[in-house]
Length: 403
Ligand code: GLV
Ligand code: GLV
Image 1 (tube, protein in one colour):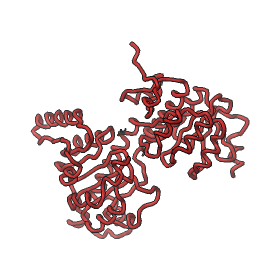
Image 2 (cartoon, rainbow, N blue to C red):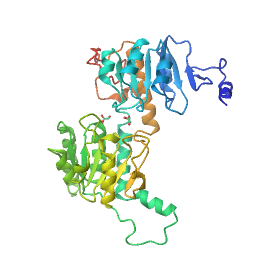
Image 3 (tube, rainbow, N blue to C red):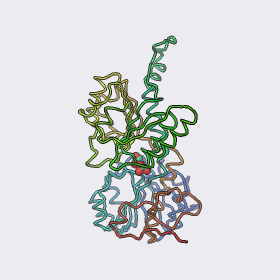
């Protein structure tokens, strides 16, 4: 089979710029490119490859299904590798960055907004710029959080399993009673881009009040809620309220639904533990589309067991793809396999940003330092690297507007 792949794609002949597939599960685009880029998993769309090829890169893309081990990644980088686009399931630690530096590498981009898989300090020490892919996945992830919120509140998973199992015999007044969201209070933990987008969808779509917990106040979000309330008042509808919680405990006590949008770091690991779960309303909904380890998953299983009216909806897990024992047996839990950013637009956009990060750094372009990242998806992208996390630490020049 493997060698046939080579034949189908015409190795050595008919090769186009987007690549030929070798028998060893690697696709090479622009084999004669001067800079060598390793991409540890194939990405959606073509434009990201075109960007790297236009920047003079030879792009080596892993097309197999297994995860590459750190050793395999190290071997592939070999003695000459200018940049890497990697995945959130790979631990980019001191040893991988050391190998990348040893191969002459200058840049690594995560294919994700989250970067808890990266030892940023190690990369910085080794002079390697690290990119991520914010912005383009904000709407997709917020929409999934809304979908999970509704699925949990209205018991969609349970109801579907019941129907598919042939248990549905008749319409019943008490069948799968759930929670209506209108007028309820939604708690947002982490009011960054995704948290704010989710808050707006809930507030504007479902007329929920918002209580948010974040390090800094979010005046823009509060002003939006005030403006939306004026709009509602003009239509003689009740206003919505948006305010910041002093402490995460206050939010947990008050909210009917809590959605987590904080990055994972030492300060947020197991932020939601047994103690804090016990503060929540017994019939609350808890949604997580950020990183699994923000919740103590074993404590959540225990809590859901003891409170059948409580509902959780998870996209992310502590030890993906494994689930903590008991989680998958719970009826009051909705589970999906880390698909927050999984829309074609978002995933192609993430690939473009990752490619622009790598191409931008290698071309010595400045780091973009503005929120309007979508400019990179347009035909004529700005001459910058869209999102470099350690730009300041590395003293990279920042993009300046001309004119
Ligand atoms: C996905 O989880 C991401 O961080 O982009
Ligand atoms: C994602 O883009 C975030 O910063 O929340």
